[in-house]
Length: 190
Image 1 (cartoon, rainbow, N blue to C red):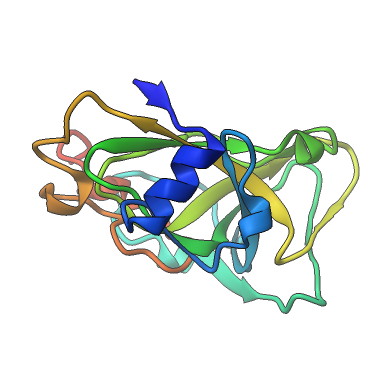
Image 2 (cartoon, rainbow, N blue to C red):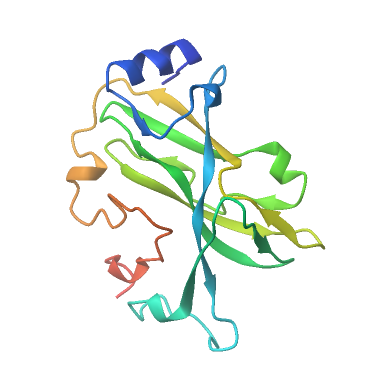
């Protein structure tokens, strides 16, 4: 696989191969694209949750949705885990894979931008859900619109035969908010 340079990324965007809605051109780096933090966050209802059972199914009742404005930061506390989303809506073509990484500036404040799920599969379309945690000892303000993560794109040797958008059971395709886990839909969890 070959990592796309800024020139390749711009070319793929101009041809409509890669689509990133609401992308600011200044967020295209030499080999990656910086994405910004959205304004919606999901937090666990700690006082009501004794445990999480992956077989349970619908987890909507376990988390609250919090909406913030660009002028109103979300405060993530030490040891807290939240779901957030990128502001940008991303479409990855069938012949590429994207990799999500947190920005080092946030890591130096103790913010883990994604716990797992760093691969964005060929054919995926949607806002990216960020699995965030604060591993520092102090609360940190998260400002909607801040550059929070980056995507690199790799060109595959051939297009996927079964891209994410055509695969049966693609649970998060088209997501527009921080999507709660749908692990109970996995065949091996039942």
